[in-house]
Length: 428
Figure 1 (cartoon, rainbow, N blue to C red):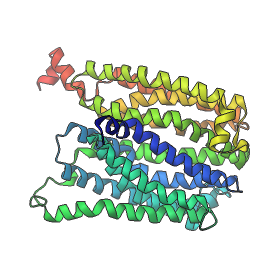
Figure 2: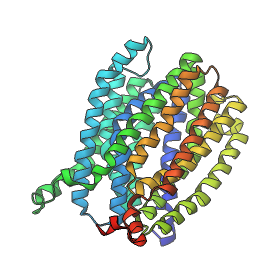
Figure 3: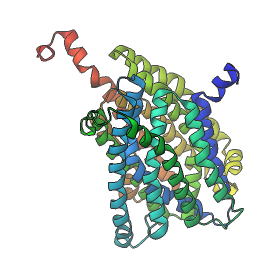
Figure 4: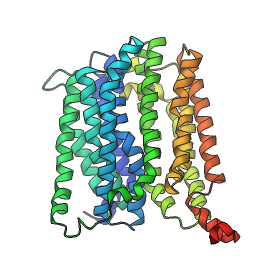
């Protein structure tokens, strides 16, 4: 392979585009099924999947990428600690969800999230997905993008086959079972070499205890984001379905998935390219330069792309889904404007991860999707336009909070700032 071709196919953009295309192809196959509500139902199951995995990956994942980019910790020790902490957290989340989901549905006398076999398969899949998620975070920090592409291909192919309905009628339990057993195979494939290395490693027993891992600093942020974001979006969908219908929730889900071609691409570029740069910045001035540079080169083009999506949604959404998934123009415009604010807020969010301001991350999480869910519930929103207004208000507040934290709190540059000012605290 020539250097030019290698640079193109192993670039961050190629990794992200393949991931988005893979997910879009599965969504398209599911959208072709007779039951329009299948998209929304699987999205609710995906929320259980996401809570189980994200409770670990939302914090430990960025932390792993940060320390992998700095290359100042042994890779074996780093991955060992990440797997121990992440799998422990995800297992606790899985057990809690298995008990809480049926109880929650009974309490509200309606299905907030799938229970029974579909719920168990989604939760089990989320637990197993923690393993490939951690390896992807490591490879992101190390910039080993070829491995990330291979992982995406191996993860996508069985699910696309299951969603196609070529061999078996597509249903939620069947698709979730295919996802679960795919992840069983992937987890075994990834962990086998590491277990073999651990047994052969002479210094494994003498390595520092996992209890002393610097990744512990990311646990609070991970729990906050990993629980609150998926749980809030699950509640928001259920609340809108209760006030409107599952068909309208499916329209919103289709819009969100379509906008992820912009927000997912831009957000992943921030995490893959600019998070390691922010983490490697040696001073506050260099760090803030990376923040402004990211806003300029990611968020401005992203906002323009979202505006273009709004203008062409009558063409784009039927291609990715079908005409029945089109939303009213006013409602889609409000949600896409909220997505532009959401994208802008991710830049200071990654900056807080890079500078280890994990408490601020955990606090700010309450001002994102949990605030949106609270507004929908308290205001009793009865239309997609009203929900879109709540979405904009939510992410305007979240963007303001994250930006304030970046500019008004020093993070890991506190010691350097105190020393520069000659503070007695620094001397002590």
